[in-house]
Image (cartoon, rainbow, N blue to C red; front, side, top):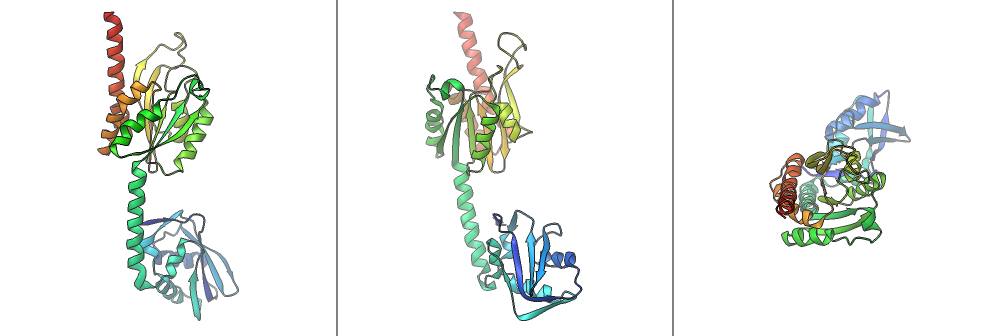
Length: 299
């Protein structure tokens, strides 16, 4: 079923209509039944000069339910007690609700074309990736940001379209704001790198939790709070979903990003939940840390 975002164009109105002692709430419900809308999704907001204005509260509608429905809507309104339609009665809207007035014989083509477009957009969004790096040292140019290139080298070869969102300082509000902006840009995957540690300056996961309260995390290492610079008990990766966008928070070191990406791609391809994806990307990073620790131990 193809859905349409109303994009703030939520009004539709009927011209050449007269009302006499009509229950406006029930009239809106009547119209909503024709258009596949619930009683809470449509209201009458104005009645004057032979016009009745309806406002659709729902942010989106089903194209299948509204395309070519002008004749049905007018017939339902004409049968409503106290409603009289003139010979020039018609339905109008400035937005996508205008497809109500499309010729009924064209409705099937409109729906089919929209479905093809929606499928194409969904396919594009699912393959669109954006990388946001965090960290004061990176933002100031003291450390080269190689993570975007790393993500592009791995996911780009898998057919993903990888974009760079730049670098943001270690500031929770700034990171959350940048992520929030990117969520509206049509990416299927948003990867952050850096800021997932146990130090006070590490703010990425906390920023992401502002937008995804049920964010899933997986622990990479545990520390005693107050030991050295550690003010948090864990170093973690994270994963969550907002609408069509999957958010993944990875560490800053590029070798850890490179280790995690193949597992991330596999888990995404399997349609795994955020909690499973978080554990999947954590496993190879833990293995790297363990191997590094053992190497130092042997030395």
